Length: 282
Length: 256
Figure 1 (cartoon, rainbow over the protein chains, first blue to last red):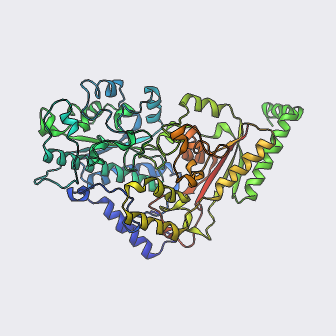
Figure 2: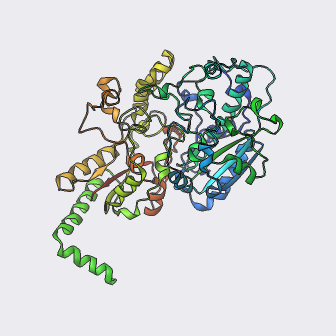
């Protein structure tokens, strides 16, 4: 960190927030009803104003820092890879999301099927980046039923005549996805404020579950509707990321069918269940 | 001087239209400097880096502007191959590095930067509590977040270039076009009716979001540097005596 010219108080404040951002993300950190308005000024993490473009010689130290950050936030493994090593496959969306169709298909603005881009464009998008921080996250151990605010997602289970879902199971999965989302959000934030202005967190799981479980339907999908959150992004399948091949490539074991969107309760072997987070670094 | 360069010079000299273009470009460069830029250049468009990531990054994570107006994604999006063809059709741009006036630092970074939070409150207030709305209105009032001079640099040059006959001269719009629709409660009428209430003012947002103009890549090409700005860097997070570079915005006008 460039330290010249800052007062002791400024440096103390940056250090306080650096520690805060690096802390392990606990269930309590993401529990409760979704926050709709931005954090208040005193709750916004603060960073020193870095200079960009970032010199190339700082890249490897920065990538190592982001991997350490992912681990300190609770990731089971983290690795910096070349962006071109991210496997992309048309089947990730057109088979993975559709055959059989995902429960959350077309339910939210950030579902890959809602806004589709040509495969060649998404290959170009990923190759515009030099690196990616990829991390493995195990589902958190949750004993009691966590408070996630109101959950109004029954219709996605009952529309076809099915049984209403177990609320405790839904709450556990909302927490699981919120933790993954929060890790990606913080990693991108740290990279952005280091000067990697194009850092991009790739979405993890349906945002109707993580952000809008209380709303029942996505307000951005209504005519002239607008999404209210700035802490969401399209899922990796929009970019045609083949998370299964990525997990194999990194020796993290076979990823469950459905990837991050699948619930541990739905997969053949929950003991081998894990999620993958991806943040692209320019 | 190499043979090609001297030939190019001769061609320009023998072509009055080219000569006028060069004179106009120099005039626009001087205008940018006079309006507060600390560096302004005539840039061959080949030096402007165009990347799809510059457009897509608005979605990763989602920007406040998405979906709020006709000229924002997803209602308006130039197909990527057209965006490439459009930029490739230009030869020269004026690029100006416009530092923030530090005598009133409250409007260049932090949540109220560029005045967009004021708009965001109006757009998103149905989802916020009364307390949150009151709180953020007070912050906007206190910090006086408003638009930066860089927008007027590009607007003025664009206007002048059009008058000079460069009919496709274009500078991006700084911020969301619903800044012109305050009287409609920052609601985009074009999204409802298909007809914009502010034709002549509204336009697609920014050269980055529409054409994929990549700031980090272009800055590297030009040897420019800048300071990160954003919600998590408040004006009071800057050192009192700032060493170079100072925080700035970039005005880019494609001329011809």
